[in-house]
Length: 373
Image (cartoon, rainbow, N blue to C red; front, side, top):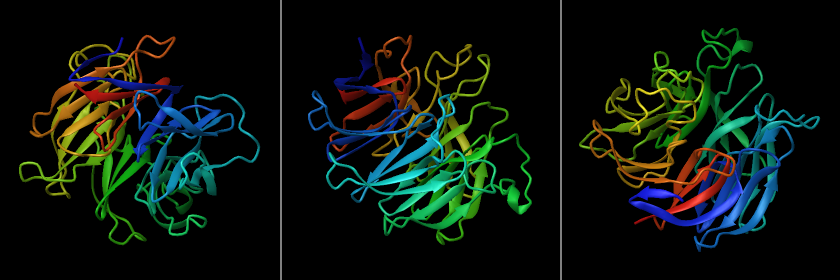
C-alpha cells in the first residue's frame, strides 16, 4: 500500500509509464515513455474516477514523452527513443507536434515541425513561444531554439543559442565527449531563459532580443559530481531579499559508489556570478552505494510558494521547503507502490493543479493523484 507523511492518495489512473504530466482545467495531459503510447488526455475533475478522453500513438523506435499546453494548443515532442531497439519507420523525423485542443477529447493535429537527428527532447511553452532543445543539422548535441507559434500552422524559428563548441559545421570543436554538453531544456522567466545543459551545468540566457539570445552566466559542477543537470528552475519571488534558482541533477550515468543526484539552491542575486548556497538529498541516500534512478529527478515547474514538490525517482514524491535557502528541508512525502513487476517506484514527473492536488507520474506505470492530509 502507498505510504505518506502529510500526504495521501486521492486517486489513481492506471496508464503506461510517462515522462511528463500537465493539468489544465481539470484535464491531465500525460506524455508516455514508450511507443505505441504517445499522449493520453484524461479527465481528472473527479480524482477518484479519472476518465480517458483521447490518445495519440507513436511509431516503433520513437517516443513522445513530453507535453505542454497553453492558449488552446498542445505541444508534444517527437524523438528517437534510444532504449527502444525496434526499427523506426522509413522517412520518420523527430521534432514537435502542434495540436488544437479547444475540444480536449478531440486533439486535432495542426502541424508537425521536423528536424534532423534525434528530434526534440524537452521544452517550455508560454502559449505563443516554444523554448526547446532540438537536434539541428551542423551541431553536435541538442541546442536551444526559440520558436514562434503566432500562426500554429506555420511555426517560425526566432532565435537559437548553443554552447561554443557545438557548431561543428561552423568550424567549432567541442572540448567534451560526444554530446555530453547539450541543451536539456530552457525555462522562461521574464526576459531570461534558465537552461539546463546536461554535463555542461546550466546557463542563464538574456532573451530581451529573442533573435539574438546572449549568455549572462553559467555554472557547472560536473565534474566532480557525476550526474547531469536536468532542470534549472527560477524561483519567481525573492526569498529573504535575494533571488534564487533551484537546480535539479538527474540520477543517471554514474557508478553505484558515486554520489547520487541531489538538489541545489543557487543564489543569483548577482546573476553574473551564480553561487551555490546549499543542497538537499533525501535522508538515507548520502554515503551509501545506490543504483542509478534512486536520487533526484524533477521538481514541479509550477512554483506556488516555498514548498517545492519533487519527483525523486525511487523515493516518490518529496516536498522540500526552501524558505530558508541555505537549509532546505523535507516537510512531506508520498511513496507510491512500485509498478507491477518492479521492486521500487520510478517517479518521473510531478505537477500540481489549481485545487492543490499533486499528480505524480511513474516512469514505468501509473499516475498517482495525491492530496494533503
